Length: 398
Image (cartoon, rainbow, N blue to C red):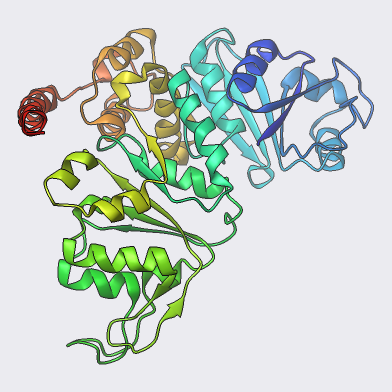
C-alpha cells in the first residue's frame, strides 16, 4: 500500500489532501508544523516506507531552501518531493521538474477546488494505474487487492472501455509476481489459425513460414501474469487445449513432442454475458468455470460519475507532459463531463479531452472546448435494444 508524508506547515490544502488520500487507502504520515531541524519530519519513520512527500513552498523557505529540503528528504529515503505554491493569477497548473523529476514544483490558483486536490493526488500516486474517486470503484479495488497476492484465476467482466485491462494490470502490480513479466494477448485480434502457435509456441518447421522456433505467450509469461483479453472470442477448437493447459500447467508447442511446465498466473476478460455465451454453445462451460474462480465486474463510466474527474486528470497528464502544464477544467466544462453518459466509457472520455486540449490552445478547458460526439449515444441505444431482445429470448427459452 502506498504511503505519503504530508508536511502541514504552510500547506493550506493539508487537511483536505489528507482526507482524500486516506479515503483512497493511502497511508498518510503527518509531519511537523514548522520545525527547521534536519529531521524536520518530527516522526519515527521505522516501519514506514513512504516514497513521496508533499509540502508547501513556505516550508521550503522555512527549512533553508531546496538543498536543505533535499538533504532531509534523502535522510528519510524519499524518492519524490512535491512542493505546492498558490498563485491566483494562473489559469493552468504549472508543474516544474527539478533534479530529474525528483522534485515537482506545482503552482495552483485555488486550494479549495476539488480539481486541484485530484491533481495533487495524481502526482502523489502516479505509480497507481487505476484512477478512482467513486465508492463503487474503491470497493472493486479493495476486492482486487485481496485476491492479488494469490494465484487464483480471476475473470474480469465488463463493458468495452470500462478499464478491464487496467484492472488486470492493477492485480499484477499488487501481486507477488509484480517483478516478473505481465503479458497480455487479445484473443480477438489474432487470426484463428495462428492463435495456438502464439499462445503455446511452435517448433521450427511446424508449419509454412515457421523458419524459427518460438516459445509462445505462456512461456514468455513464465513466473509472471498472463492476461487473456476478450477470451470469449477464442475459437471452440482452442478452448479445449487451453483448459488442459490450465489444469496441468503444461504447454505443448505446435509441432513439439513433449510437454513443457509453466508457472503462470492467468487473468481473463470479456465484455460478453458469459452465461449466455455458454448456453449458446459458443464457450465451453468447463473452461468458463475454470477461469471464473474469482469474478470481478467493471462498470460503465456513467455508473461511477465520481471517477470522471480523477480519470480526466490522469488523461490530461498523459497527453500534455511535454509542456509541463495540466490545464484547468472550468466548472462549466466539468458539468458537461459529469452529465454525459459516456457510452464509449473511458476511451470516449479520452478522445473528448484530447480534442479539448487542441481547442483550448493550452489555456483553461471551458465548455466551448468540450465536443461530445452524440452519435455514439444513438448507436449504443440501438445496440442496447438488440441486446435486450436477445436476453429476453434467452430467458424465455430457459
